[in-house]
Image 1: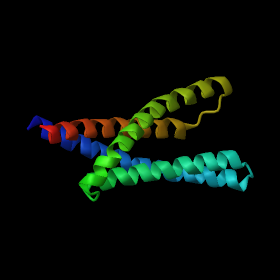
Image 2: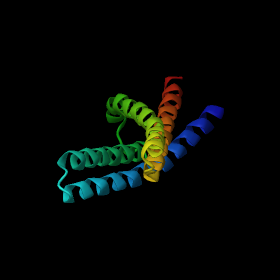
Image 3: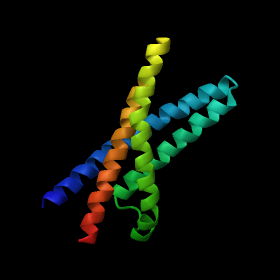
Image 4: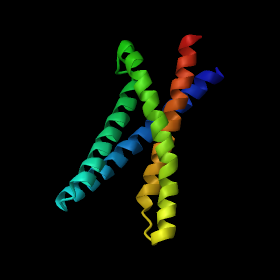
Length: 140
């Protein structure tokens, strides 16, 4: 009973943070477009690809939560989703710290770095919790 509540809570947190991750992806895609218009191809591709990955991860998470992904496909995608969750959590924890360091050195504070970092951290932690709890539920 408690485990079921925890699974529901983790699923709700993952759903909400996935929606925010998709919104963050739109911000990164906009940054990519801005770099394309300024003829800076490396950063344009960097932010565009990351925005596309955020979009895919958020949409995939929402589809998995809505049970629109068949069980065999979800079993195959689970390690990729867990790896993505770990990377999101680690990068999400680092991004606000890097933003703070940059602010102290240059005086340039980019609040979107803190916000997107916290969204990444929340999504990663929620995805890890959801996978850990739902896997244990299926195993028992």
